[in-house]
Length: 340
Ligand SMILES: [Zn+2]
Image 1 (tube, rainbow, N blue to C red):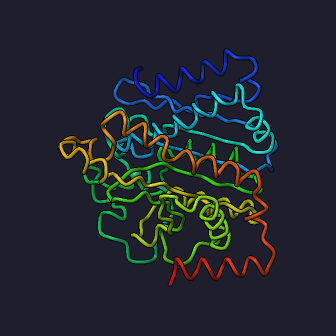
Image 2: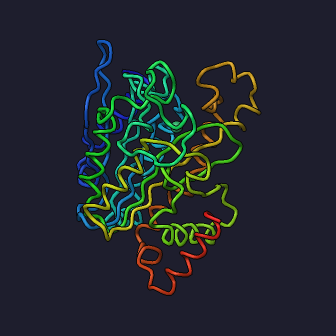
């Protein structure tokens, strides 16, 4: 195997060969996906606290294989973190109280075969059992007419292997955490980098809207010049089978008092295309920066958000354990900015 999977494996081997790092980082092969006589592993890294109640950041990339920059970004943030863990005492201290789980490449078949879907032509972001009762856009919101068309949901009641692995790892690492943020890296059309939170299946406001507002406000106050547009996914369009809606709803059944914010970062690709128009003729060029310097800039661009999320989890009571007056204030503020 060459490319990203080889880089991920190399990082895992580096961890396993270093006695000090091995105490802090756990590298695993979660599953090997078979596709036409080839085998594609799904790797994960778990860093930091083993206390099941400690707050957790759950980070994923490459759910849509073609949006390769997402997987590369997850890998780059992971690599920086592991390199810093060797010498950075403040980061080591942070990880005595916080857990980080990274699955840098959830859909390796899609990534290597330049497909949005997995090897069975299923769109992993339309495949969960969550069904919308509201009007969803034709095809785009998920469809079961044909696996030859985009946004195919897969067979009813069947969770694709990649999603099953993702859910298993999520519940194993997060089911008892007091506070969880997940971030899933994607790229798509648009000029802006967007951060979406649930729901995707309904326009009903998200249960943790007060906490999202407190979290977002803290981010905006700390980094007033940040680049993101933060909004519920339902502001764009509704869809069936979002895996993060599913994880949120299932986690609530097991651990109703936990605060969980699932985030999706949708990196706008129009700026890359605009600066290098020829890349529109390449299948991956529509979704990814093609020039190395632009890829590097993308890594740097999102480090601030990543660093903020880790530190906000370390100090999570500030935004996740609000007293009733403050909570009401954030509820009103969140409802006004996102749902009116
Ligand atoms: Zn995507």
